Image (cartoon, rainbow, N blue to C red; front, side, top):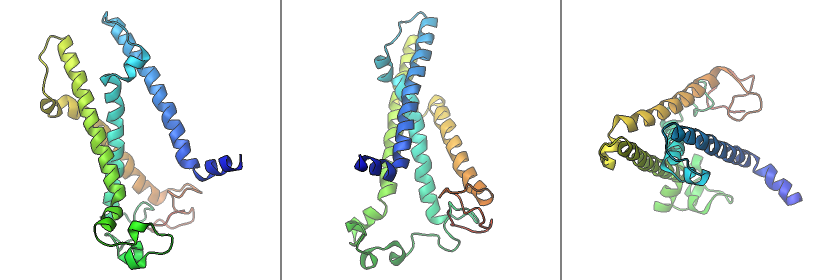
Length: 227
């Protein structure tokens, strides 16, 4: 019991978001299944079981559409904050500290301490890969979810084409279509707005106790200061 409490305490943030993610995904599946079958009935077409629905391209496209935009958001924000600054924002590094920083400040190679990961203590390719490992993984997830969105969307689009007696299109034609980019850019613009507005609002507004906010009494000009 003590180990369980310790596990929950030390991993509370990730477990909290995992639980509400699963709850939202299940809720999306149930609501989407109901809406899909209502549309099927309106067109005199057969209903799908819940399992058939969640394994369909219709559901897959809806899920992947959101996943790829979220990972793109974090990937770009992480990359942009290496070089770009925002005066007064806790989401920015301090003015004058743009760039990849020195080995000493990053605790690489000879500057690593006893608690540093093994690949941070080395030089060459392993150090370079580990130095960019978060970006590499986030980019891979984004590319994978974007591709999954394109394939499920393409399958769904061709199913619609078949229903209306129209010819199917190739994957390349689909990802160059207005239908694909309208859905994609709809998600992207909302993510970019959210990140950009948070970076600037955090200059002037506070949330006591949050590491994403500056201390309540910090000046508006304080940059790279988190609570």
